[in-house]
Amino acid sequence: MPWLLLAPGLAWLLAFYVLPAVQMFTYSISTGSLERGFEMTGSLNAYEEAISRFGRQFLNSILYGGAATIFTFLIGFPVAYTIAFRGGRYKNLILFLVIAPFFTSFLIRTISWQILLGDEGPVLGPLKQLQLLPGTFSVLGTAVAQVAGLTYNFLPFMILPLYVALEKIDIRLIEAAGDLYAGRWAAFRRVTLPLALPGVFAGSLLTLIPAMGDYINAELLGNPQTRMIGNVIQNRLLIQNDYPVGSALSFMLMAAILVAVFIYARALGTEQLTG
Image (cartoon, rainbow, N blue to C red; front, side):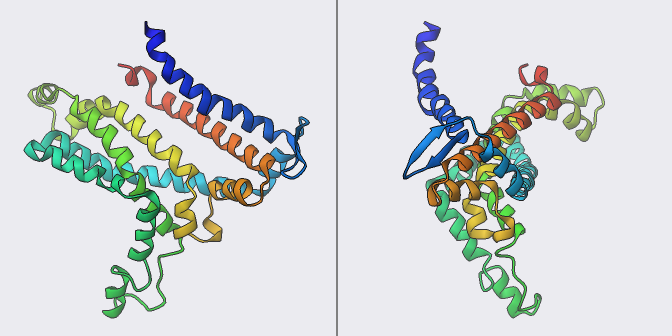
């Protein structure tokens, strides 16, 4: 019976994850073109080109994706904590406000940041009119705008797992820490935060993985120097039809994320995450 219940999910993963991943790997060691067709030759030229030419884009993905993950945690944890312990009768309303951006497409939300951070937009425009900022000051087209867009777009993915983990905490444990003469900070550090680690882990993964592979924010809010590896993959696969290099880049990105997840799980302590 357990296998029967798992069968639909396993079939879905096999059809839409495992098989595409295998095909992606075979393309990465193939040669040819879209017109002539691709033949699997075992060539590693695509990986050599990916490593030699696109190291900067890989570094940008790590830096900007990591920065967005950190900012979503710093913003999201107080929000999730407030909802879980102070939300009261407004808890459902606040949760709705958290997920409300999902009712708008990802692309439109990013375009709205273009308008918001524009040189004459509602943020910079009044400051320039008041001469608090020089007329040449600009945020759009910088790494700051790009990370801000990533943080905004993926913030709900951090808040929701954190809220679930915090909401499960028995408030009596925190009260017991207080009875044992622990201050608020000590109770938070020794009780609340360790019990919230599963949410921290899940939220970090749900934020970091799509943020590292994103290309829309880099395209609309960044500049050519802040392009991420997702931009290169999109260009190689959909514009240049260079399937070997695009597949090699995708496979390398997937492998790098899996290694990062493994290291992160070991750093947090898997025994705490499974408790």
